Length: 526
Image (cartoon, rainbow, N blue to C red; front, side, top):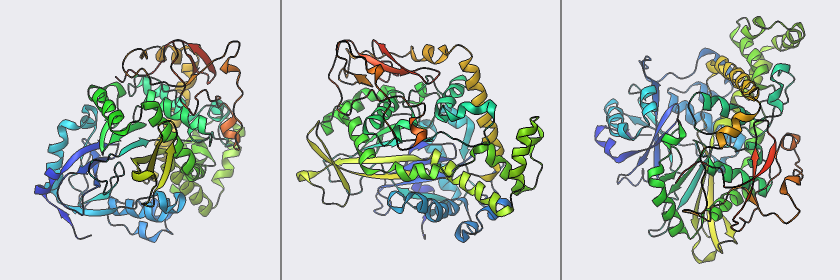
């Protein structure tokens, strides 16, 4: 598009957050075209060589991989490639209804340099140490800010949640080695938590189970949302009128990244302007996910990864025509025979395996943004879907979009394989500690409901005399992956009343769900 952002425009863009590859800026200027937009500018690792003639696009092997997507192969910059990947690949997989194709704008070097100076004090310190703005890029990716409704009347409010669902199924690939068979019964998210804790990326093990969020069960979806809220890390964030009020700024040690010093006031403001208590708000989020079915196509896209990384890595070596380092380091003759089948695949089949794996990887790592605003007069007339929340007697309209649909680089396949092995090995070693590691971690930050926000409850079940909710059977699911190793839902769709002594369902290091009496164990977010 014919737009150039110059140094003097930098003052109109403020820091909103960042991930591993991009910094996200929100527009606060007066341009009608840019109002309600966010800009993603690329980062480069500190100490690495920046692009000389703009940003690098596709490698030779990636052009072979995406050869039938002409617009993607011919992209002249990374931002154009990103737009074409979303438009011609992910939009077909997830449906255009939930996709914002975005556009790209031209940016000057001076604009990027000014932005880097302006946002420096807002960025987490470890992000500053790891990467900087790639000032050699000549374009940036522009999309709508889905944490707000464009044209929301003054005096109204908009509240939004950003969720990273993660992988919603358990793999069953025959190429998973016996030593890694735990992958078939424990979620990748669960295992990765232990490695992240060891590396100092998080301060607590999250009890979130992606299988609950993707289950299609209203109660289990609600349970997933409450556990995400209890330990948000970088997987759950809340925005009020476009401003982050709860959750991390972009990863790192979650206790440092969460803006806890501002959250007391922000959560109070949320309750004040919306009339919703927190349990009701979490119920609203769960109801939107359940009623919209927005995660159905995401799960189907994730399941394109049929062979798991332990199978896909062999297709990668087929494509790059190099000896398979995995086979070289493997001493099991039976497995070598099995893997030899993969290496005998024709080129077109290997290409399909890799394409499916990388598309699935995008789906496993994206975020879901759901925005809500109250419906005036009781019925929606704007074309958005609506929800009636009985607990608060309110109508809300909502919109849902997938964001962060980045194309995964083919050259990182070896990294994906090595990380997968590292996660499993470390998790197995953690379990060797007698299953006590998770329990000892979650004993830490305790929030007693007798204090502020006493009405906030997580995963509580009301127990009758002589009845234990731990005896409930897991809810049946149409997919075997969801029922295997999946805890029964102890969270009620209607948040239970306050009790002086509560029964909480906890998942231990082995994935077992057990009741525990006492105060709620969550992160100390207030």
